[in-house]
Image 1 (cartoon, rainbow, N blue to C red):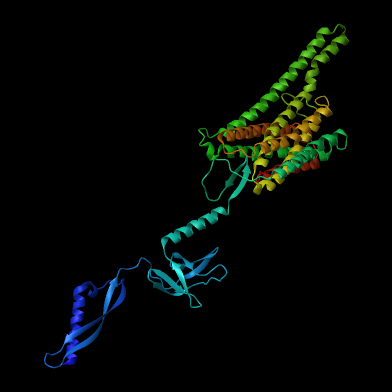
Image 2: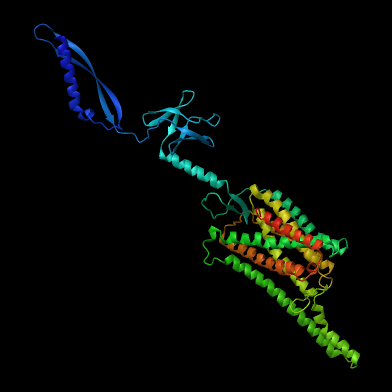
Length: 505
């Protein structure tokens, strides 16, 4: 009877478990469900026959299949096509990418991991050494990796430089813009010392053409002087468009200024500077003609001679202004509106050029000083060459002035003003270093306006008074092939060199 009693007890226990958990015995379980086993142990005391068998203890072990809800993690058996992003290893499962936790930057990443399995809600795979590596299957990890990848690719193309104390960045990822003054630690002693280096370099550039022509070391017809003059013309043109106009657009496009209602603000201010230069040249020419005619009329009235020779002299004196305005150097264009500039007109033209250069040179000094120490040395080297080349451009124009327009002392004063203006800007920048905010709207408008205005002035002087006058109405119109080729190469070199410097300043 003992076997019968044990079988009866086991069947009773199984029936009891099934009655309490009927869902565990679903004949059609979800094929995707995970299967778990539950071991139920029960000790049942079964009374034997009342006659003589006595009480017996029976131990029954039953195994029940329990179905649990499917995990959110995908079923992964192997990860392959593993690749590194900096110090993180990423592997592919089909078209999905997952981060592998375990290997470090000093270990060699494997191409794949096999025998993937789960421990609770986490997924692990086995490496070649038999150890487990964790596979992150959460979507947040994928999103962070995508963000990291996009930031890396964008940041690789980012190019930043300082202008007016503001770090301008082109390319890369966008970040939140702060319009407050950026606190920085500045090396004041270094800035004061390099102020004198800028002064010496600017003086060398501007005085070299003036003094070499004054003491007849190089004549104005010498090929070296011609090359320097055309090189300076290229410098002026490139400064107008690459440096000043671009910087003005950066200032007026600053987010701290807000959206401009008039999109052509930079071009409008540029046009205003160009028109003012034209107006100064035109009014200067009219004034010179008026003064010459007035002097001729006075000489005619005071003449007391009535003989034919005296009349001829009088007629010649009346025609003198026109002859003085005629184009020299045997040019075939010496007629009509194309006339040789008088000494006074030439002086006005050079003063126009210097005004445009002075406006932006003082800004260059401020820009250099308020730049952060991380970029200061780079910007200093760029501005050092910028000022020297610009000094050569201005110096050749000053050196060409005839003695009737400016004496040697006046030429030196004009050159000295240029040599001092950038150091003066640096001194102003040092004085306001701790309170200067390049993102202040009033500062943005002031600097942007001066940049665009200077660009217009230099564009007029560079194109009309330098480029067109030398090549279309001057000595280079009828120059030989060798001289013309050398001048053209110098012109292009000036354009290219200053344009390259525009990448940093």
